[in-house]
Every structure is written in structure tokens, then in C-alpha cells.
Image (tube, rainbow, N blue to C red):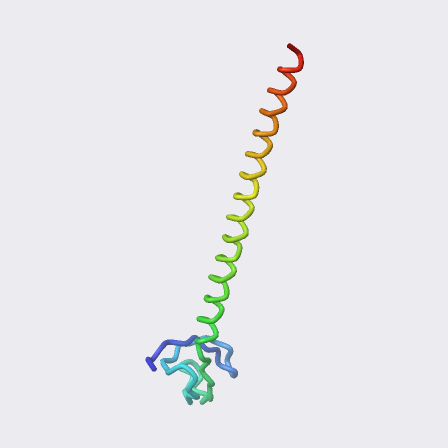
Amino acid sequence: MTLRYFQVSCKNCMRQFSIKAEEGATVKCNCPFCGVESTIAVPMLTAEKQREKEKETRKQFISEIGKKAIISFLIFATILIIASTLLYVVFTAMSN
């Protein structure tokens, strides 16, 4: 695993500072402002990656629905044009 920077808040003075740690590790650090020692459980970032995959899947699903809607509309429009043309020909022939 690689070291990453994480933003944390001191429980004593409530000021924010950055720490450098591995994902999923538990780190003891001192607040640079008040000096109080804190134990921090660093989160795993694989949950973020999972959320990104879910968003991508949702976008792909919406894209599939959009494609189906467009194809359905084009088929309907084509059938409507063909039916209108046939009716025009039939009624024109009947009026002569």
C-alpha cells in the first residue's frame, strides 16, 4: 500500500491538520497546534472505488435506456410515416 495524506481534526482544539499514513492503518500522532496525542483509524479507500464503479454502471444503464427509447421512437415514427403514406395512396385512389 502507498502512503497518502489524510485531513483530520484534533479532538482537543478542533483544528484540522494533515497526516501521512497507509490506508486502513491506525496511527498515533500529535496535534501540531495543541500537542495532544490522538489515535486515528485511517479509512480504506476501496469504498470510494466501489462507489465510482456503481456510478459508472448507473450511467451505462441510463445510456442503455436512452438508446432503447430512441430506437423505439424511430421505429414508431417509421411505422407512422408508412401508414400515413399507405392511407394517402388508398384515399387518393378512391377519390378518382
